[in-house]
Amino acid sequence: MQAKVSTELTQEKVDKAVSAILEVLGKPENDLHHKALTAFQGGDHQTVKRLSSTNLTDYYCKALGYLGGALKLTPNTDTILAESARSAAEFVKEKALQHLGIQIADALN
Image 1 (cartoon, rainbow, N blue to C red):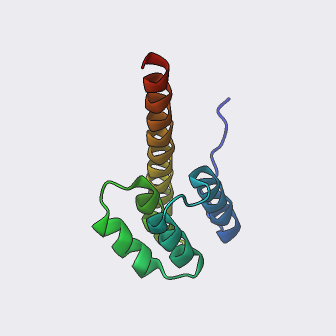
Image 2 (image 1 turned 135 degrees about the vertical axis):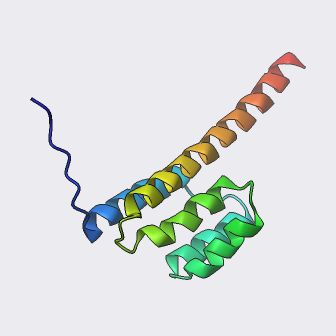
């Protein structure tokens, strides 16, 4: 017997997914991230998209840039959430690698 996957999207479900992604991103650690998060929380998704498009290597901004589009329930919401989640994971991965690099350098020097 195969488990049935619910494909029904509700605003409540999307809000939970958005909250999970925001939790992974954590608190902003620099001015750019603070500006992007403040804009996102204020509903200024165009500013967030602009910050994402002008800071192409920044996964924090990229994750937030997608999230504004996820708040509108469309056939693309699942894809938007997935891309935002992947960007949030890449952000955390980069932070971990940077931290480990510093720790290893301290240990070996």
